[in-house]
Length: 244
Image 1 (cartoon, rainbow, N blue to C red):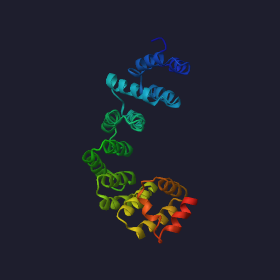
Image 2: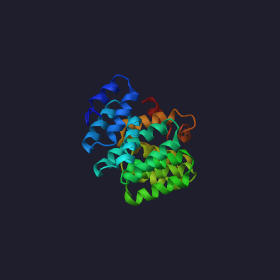
Image 3: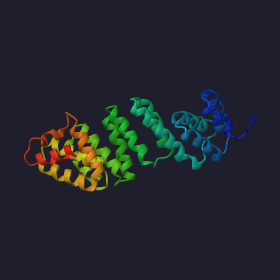
């Protein structure tokens, strides 16, 4: 290759819309370049929003020459980002394959493990989701995102009462989303007074985020929060939230 480790031709090809040429040049470079050059190549793709093509480059590099230790987390992070895109578009098996690879390379990345559990949950594989979370929680027992996801697995598999323990811990750890899930679980169990207390706590701890979450949830015609609409203990509070 005449340009050696120069990424300029790749950037020019990307900017000119020559995706096939860019991919060919980039794969050749990724298979032999040093870590610093790979970082520049990754930045070129990242800044252009081409995450899944970058994932292909990282996987090609790993197969052809292996990764330096410093590349483990950037590699796993790219795989995770592409996996999230797959999840948003309903491609769960593809997402899970990437996430498994990311976990093997960087086992301490919490968000990779959480997303693995989320993919399993979306596929209805409750046991697999729970197993992933249990293993992750042995490493990070107080991580709010893991606690919230464990609560969600329990909630969606029918163990609503048990789920509140994990939602409460995640909420106390700073997760506004877990606060909403906690309130939903309490409403399912008709624990109105507790739900009111935690709505007030959510609004106090996370004023903007909490209000937005509650307003969006109240627009859902199937929300368990509907139990609060006609209860005299909560009617005024719910009306205030809906009116902003």
